Length: 337
Image (tube, rainbow, N blue to C red; front, side, top):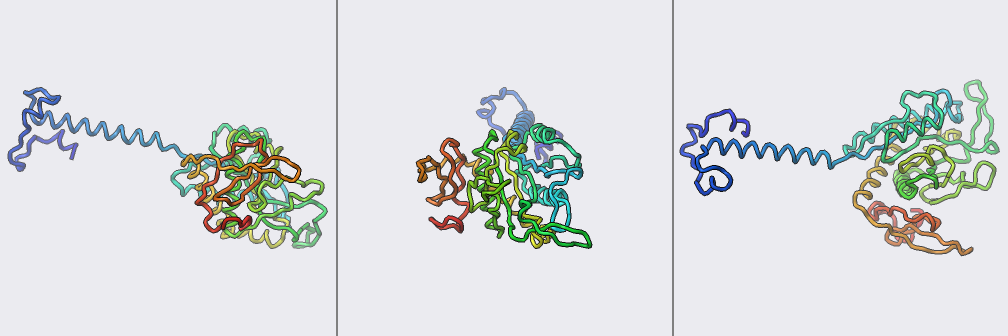
């Protein structure tokens, strides 16, 4: 309609009489200006205002960029599964499933770190991540256990190592990450979304044995501190490492090779990213209570409507609070759901 105003005679013959009063003309238009010129100027102004509004809206709606790091590479494959399959193959398939799921959210920009699978150093990997300037990093891995728990069996005529004692996911954060508070917030959110989707965390990384002894931040959510993980401590954005399951466990390996199972994990991750983004957008203040353990060490307890979620050493404050609407299935006082 506005375009017609510029190119058609005005007023159209079928429109009957058309009149713009002189008081209207006196408000910003010369008294002798023809009606058609007034209409054209008004239409042009409306078009300009409309384009400016769209431009400002586009500038204001910045996408939240998520980097998905495929752990390891074809040349450095990580651990082996109970059936001698390389961890990297599991990591790559899971990362692609997560990528597909997150791309469906119009609020997100999603990209994969090292999609070509080049053999790169940890330093190069970290540089790739920081050069992309993501708002969140999720590093995807699959887990193993310490050698003392491994047993030997034969798979397709070849010896292989397995452990059916442990299964489940684990989430790691680094205290040395510059966005550690936000990393913890997302890690706990992710852990609870995994629980809500039917997955259980593994506590084997907290065992007081050689190679383990990691500090559990939130046992219910399966969140650990692993301060020296290079990909986490050197990232300049909130970052977590997700061990999706233990591929040395024969039954869990089979599940993790199933696409529907991977899609469930990807769905939990997508829900956690959306919840984390909602919490940030709402700008909710920290909700922390200070307490002490038996030794007198001060702790901050992250709570939601009085619900214990995790204990954090007090010097790590402030921590981003979780959205108290996220987990309606939890009852006050129920620590593990």
